[in-house]
Image (cartoon, rainbow, N blue to C red; front, side):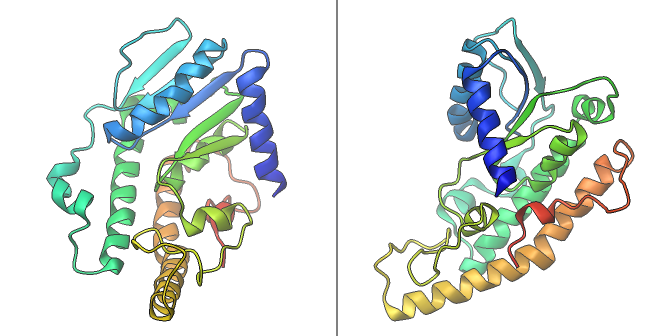
Length: 244
């Protein structure tokens, strides 16, 4: 909890204090995500901060304090995941919809980490940042940038409510009341809906801890391992977000 409060303090300082060097990351190749995130970036620039932005969408309003790392080529989502499947969730079950999110996150994360400019940033020796801001989606391996630059991380959620986000912040939300991300229910669920929601949420918790996060951990080790000196205890991203 102290880490989260410290990150929140850094965001407040970034928005109101003297100029800072900020790494701002929105690697998911969906314009609607960046359309929202860019408002935060624009306000940071307006307040005089130096921003290095990692994105798929070049800005339409260049700024003297803005350095852009444009991921090129952008990840081709329709090639791997047809748009009608993503937006309409046309998979055979809620469990497959959940795996859809994980697969998209894993693939877009690795695609970003393979970018030449981002690799140069990872391998840099003299670069530094005061704060890293990352979209809170399915890109947990990117949390390693906070470790790389030894600075706080602030995440911005573009997905709305997700059970794992609450647990990452130390908040326990009851599955009997709060529906899972992929379900259309409200908090007024029937007994059968609450039972199914608990089953799906438990599946999410277990699979996230023992299937999804180890894959993200492997990406972190693969792309950051040589550029970061790991001490006696291996740095694990899943310690930041695990709730089991």
